[in-house]
Length: 328
Image (cartoon, rainbow, N blue to C red; front, side, top):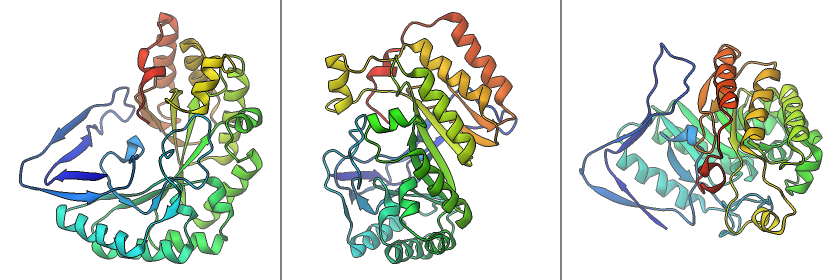
């Protein structure tokens, strides 16, 4: 896929230091027509919404697992590591396009699965070409940490990695097995312990409603209990969206999986906010979420609970894009 990038365009999220507990997400695009160039990306390209300001460097293609029943992000790709010369060429081209870069995100799926020496070369090139950069992030899996040594993870951290995005999805063993995550609670705990020992900060994402109507309570209780053990620096919850062509979509159509009600989704988020017992940044502003909020916990917890309780008291009708949006 050829991605045409207009020079000078910048997307950013509005913020205010006087309002650290945000309940709305504002998005604005500005730019000019100074020229355009072509970057080569293979297949569909995804990045997490907190990385809206980051330039994207495709380092791997697809996902090495690619079995999760709810996910269609990489169903058009065969997993492999990109040729390092192609990556370097993209890095140099991005330097030509952008005079100033503060945030860089390495895609696709679980970039951390690449060999350590390979990742060190990529990170070194990024730091050389973008010395002004303040943050380098990548997708990873908690299992990917387990497949490296703590010494290797420390090398990756020291080479410039600031944040790893990891999909937790659920802390309920039944749900984890059902969605074919190929990860257990024990795996998650082991992987996170290694990342923390290496000094790598993490953002964990998970999905409200992934237990369905019948297992909503078990799903959120298991997820919160696991989060309280893992204690990531940031968390990013999102409400379930059924993606076309996924195994989950077939389960919904067959009646094997009954979608949770909007009220259950809100109750899950309320339970989460009531029972988290560690400091973390809360990215609760995904487009699928019924209640939109982001900020530092525990400072923002009272405001967020008030916001959730307001939605629950109004007993909202199903928000269409909770189950119909196809944007992760």
